[in-house]
Length: 173
Image (tube, rainbow, N blue to C red; front, side):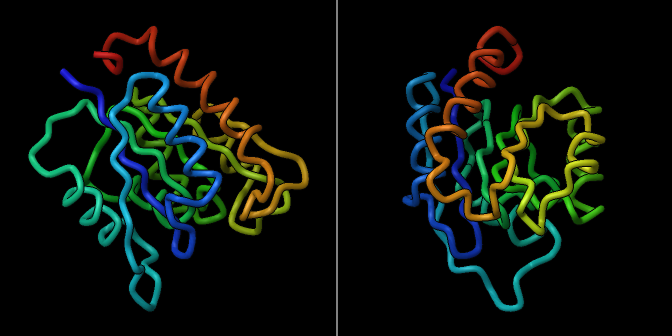
């Protein structure tokens, strides 16, 4: 069975940008078949997971996976949809939104590995709410929502998370 990773972009941050591209490369090195998604987010920007979940489901097709969702910002709203993955890498998730943190905490309670990566200068990030989800959290002091120039540091954190996942037979198969 092939492990697949879906790369979900942000509203104005395509998967070709450094943060997602670097993490796509890390996923590929760990043996995940990476499937990038591109979109033009509708206006107004969706604040729930329905639209993002539809985009993820369409990209997955009938492929059973197992799947890992690696997402940035708007793409992290997939956690609020009924579409599920075996594991999640959420870059600049919108944890200042209680609906987002509630959805992430539910995934963790369900036993799904989740990594949250955010910065203390990001207005969409909440340190306390992120920690309260029970997910693995990497917080970058002074980083804003764009995390410009931090793709190597974030890729290192994702690499460590994926190394841990490789020991988990429910995700690594």
